[in-house]
Image (tube, rainbow, N blue to C red):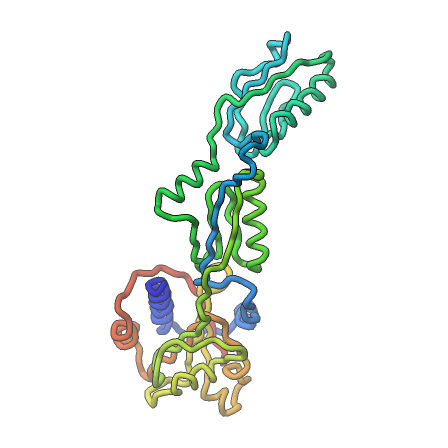
Length: 334
């Protein structure tokens, strides 16, 4: 987890220093609206949260009727009607099968008897008198066993997922789930998705194992650059004060605030903190509320080279660096 945080911190630093030599542009309304978003509430998952999904075989169903699954191969015989009989009927990934007079019939998650009842109704409707139907499972993928064996083969009893900036949860056998919603909604979606796929044969629990303490990063020409615990009403001025304030070498007129937006791109604005404190501007440095994982970069006065900034503020502060490709918008707010 610590390595994950360090890598993320390096990413932010490199993004800042890549952008810091660009000429600020006039701030757009769209960017200002993005920076005005309310802070993430504790009920939502944030980057760095870890969730655990645990799977159990439902032992109570050991003697229960077999439920058909996607991937099963069925045999369907209709007495005295060879044209209606089929040796191999594949249950498709969407849970349906295709038969004469029944081109799209739901099968997955149902018992053999339930499928027989449906087929009897279909054939009677198509003028088959008193059809005698037999359905048997010729082959099953036993996906429950496949899933459980895959997890146990790696020496685990569950799947752990760290929420990243993509905010997507990928789990086997179900569609990706967006993490940009409450944890309670995510729990329900995961459990319901596996219920649809496996019926009652699989029990699933979803828990939040840990949550990172939200922070804001303040780096550059400040007394003690580093993390600032995120609390309500934290703005750039109070964040800078929390790390000891400006150094004498700081450029207080071009403080950069960076944030990853919902599309995964980097946006930034330039803040004239000195003018804001003196009341000579719109006081955006005081009024703008920060969000977890924001980074506030205070450049030195007179530095015109990103390479020099890299040497001064990254290579001396961090244990390693990494190559990053990222798109960003550059804006200015005075």
